[in-house]
Each structure stands twice: as structure tokens, then as C-alpha cells.
Amino acid sequence: MWQMISLYLMYFYTDVMGLPAYYVGLMFLVARLVDGVADVLMGLVIDNTSTRWGRCRPYLLIGAVPFGLLCVLAFYVPDFGTTGRLIYAFITYLCLSFLYTIVNIPFCAMLPFLTSESKERTTLSTVRILLGSLGSTIVAVATLPLVKALGQGNQEHGFLYTAMVFGVIATFFLLISFRNVEEKINITSEKMTLKRAWVSLRNNPPWFVFAVNIFLMWGAFFFQTGALVYFFNYYVGNSELTALVAGISTFVPLLGTLTVPLLAKRMKKRHVYLVASAINLAGMAVMIFAGVNVMALVAGAVILSLGAGQRTAIYFSMQADPVDYGVWKTGINTAGILTSINGFLGKVAMAGAGAITGIMLSASGYVANHAQSVDALFAIKACYLYIPAALIIVSMLWIGKFYRLDDHYEQIRADLDSGINAANSDPAFNLNKSRAM
Image 1 (tube, rainbow, N blue to C red):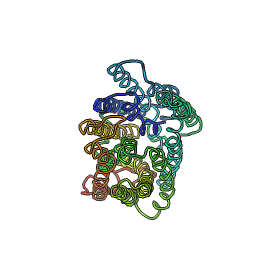
Image 2 (cartoon, rainbow, N blue to C red; image 1 turned 90 degrees about the vertical axis):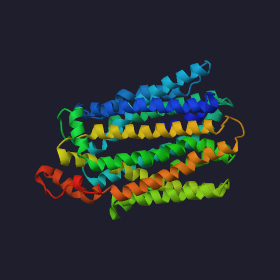
Image 3 (cartoon, rainbow, N blue to C red; image 1 turned 60 degrees about the vertical axis):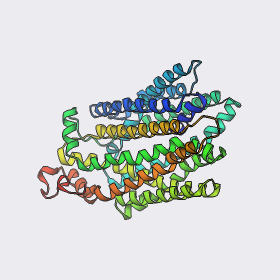
Image 4 (cartoon, helix red, strand yellow; image 1 turned 180 degrees about the vertical axis):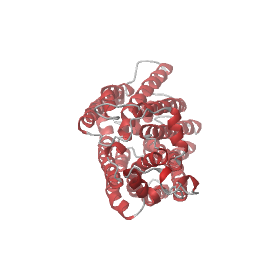
């Protein structure tokens, strides 16, 4: 369901609901920043939760039905004027984001509680991305045909009915996840406070390096997903390619994801990340120089998506490792708060990408459902290709220079399994004193 929101909600607001792109961008910025605070609070809630179902699972049950309902309401066009629709869009989008936080933060925070084995985490992360990409592919490919079929030419009705279909499916699978997943690792039951969380965070430089990269990696991702429809509808002038490339961008990552466990056995996680990013960047380069050549654009999209799938899979595997470093270093488990802060940073990246896209479209003279000016076309291509490429280059430089946790992770994991922490292990081993974290 979130794939439909990521790919089509901004387009729905500007071209179906008729909201100005500038205000849509600002609305995304404010709503996502406010919701980001909820992410952090949700992390604290998870770290202080103790039930017979575990820490994370209960929230899948609590949030499943309300989340499905808000997915539908977000794609409803009320019979209001522009101001009324802006207010309605802001309220429903903010509520939708809150409910996504309630189900997604626990879902993402669950990995450290499922297994302590690094290779198993990579496998689980790969399976998660694999199945997530499969679902995303179905949504990406099916959304526009469903909108057309269910709406019978009326996009307002089409998007609403399509959201109903996907909302029901999302609710069903959240409930299935609650029922079938088991949290096996119980690291600590000590009460989590902001003060204790801060002690752990300030002594966790690998997480800081990882956190900075969230802005870069997810910023690139959200620029592309937000601009995809505009790029193919207006810059390329071939709206039929929108569904095709959206499908490629969600199906081909499945193939990339399948290679990650094999790559992770032969190289360190950061090297997998760098290889994947290089492939992703090569695909962007092909699309940048392709102009409006359909075959070249499709080939570039395939290469781009292959690398994106690999990078996302190893990213989620890497995300769990700073949690273990924090436990090893301070004795404080912050799986929930770290995941929630990571989610907050991702939403800041999402907010920034959405706001900048909206502002650039408005400033360049974008007019919905009309032929676009040269400036507007350049702004669209910049949001879809130039800016994401620049962000990925910086991301590769950052991770390549500073991320070093995977050099020491196996020893950290062995220490934790033996009940050893930083206070009584080798005093020379201290990532805080290392230039590269």
C-alpha cells in the first residue's frame, strides 16, 4: 500500500485533486516532520513494551485496521474548494503517516529480536525485501490499470476504489504477520528513558555514520519515486511507460535482492553497499543520456533497479548491527529508539525530497495536465535523475570512508554471546577512537 502512496499520492494531489504543487510540497514537509517526532516516541514505546507477544508484534494488531481505513480516505476527493481540500489532504495524510508509524516502526525494529546471527539477519532482510518488492511490483504495475478499470475513465473514483482494494490487502497481511511471527530474542527488560537512550546514542559512532547515510540514500529514493510519474508523463511524453518503469523499479530489485546473501558471504556489508550503489548509479547515467529513447530508458531503469534492490537489502541488514554495538558498548538495548530515529530521519529525507520537488515544479512554471515549459521539464528531470545521482555519489563516498563496523562485528557478536561488553573486553578495541567508524 505504501508503494501506491509513494508513487502516486503527489500526482493524485496535483493532477486529480487539483492542489497547487507548491502547497503540496510544503504540506508533505510539515506533515512528515511532525510525524517524524511520532517515530521517536514510538521507539520509546517499543523499548518499554513487554507483552506475551513480544515488544513489536502487538502494534501490528493495533494498527492494521485503522491504517487500511486511512489509506482509503487519503485517496478520496471531498467536495470542497481548494483550501478545504488542502486541509483535508493534510489531516488525512498526517493521520495516515501516524498509523504507518504504528505498524512500520515495530515491523522494522523486530529484526534484532528474531535472531542474533549476522548471516540470518541478512537472509531475513533479503526475504523481507524480496517479498516486499514482489508486493510493490504488483502495486506499481496494477495501480494505473485498476484506476482506469474501476473508475471507468473517472480518476477520482478509480484511485478511491483502487485504494480500497490495496487497503484491505494491507490490513490482511499485517494481521497475518502479527499471527505468525515470533520474537525469540529477549535482550533486556530494563525501562528505557530518553536519558538512557542518549547515553547509548552518543557512544555509538557506527550508528551516526549509518544515520547520516539515511538522508543520502533515502533522499535519492524519494526524489525518484516522487518524480517518476511526472518524468514519463511530461518529459518523455509517454504515459504508458509510467506503469512499465514503475513495475521494473519494483520487480527487478527482486533479482538484485537474491544476490545479496551470496555477495555478503564473500565481502563485507559496506562493500556490498558500494557495489550496489555503483550499479544503481550506472543505471541513472544511462537514463540521463538516453533522452526520450524508450529502449535506452528501459535498459537504464533495469540497471538502476537492480542496484537499488541490492542496496536496500544490505541496508536493512546493516541497520540491525549498530543496535548490537550499542548493547556491547553501553549495555543498553535501543532497538526500538534507533529504529524509530532511523524512521524519523527517513521521513525527513522524504519530506525534503517532496518539498523540494513541489517547490521546483512550482518555481519552474509546472501546470498540471498541460504541455510543460523547458524550465519545468528540466526541473522534472533534475528531481528524477540529477539530484538522486548526486546524492548516491555522496553516499558512496561517506560509507566508503567512514563505515567500519563490519570490520569488528563478528567479535562484538561473540562478546555479546559470551556475556562480555566493552568494559571488560580488549581496551584497545574502541570504535569511538577510530577515524573510520
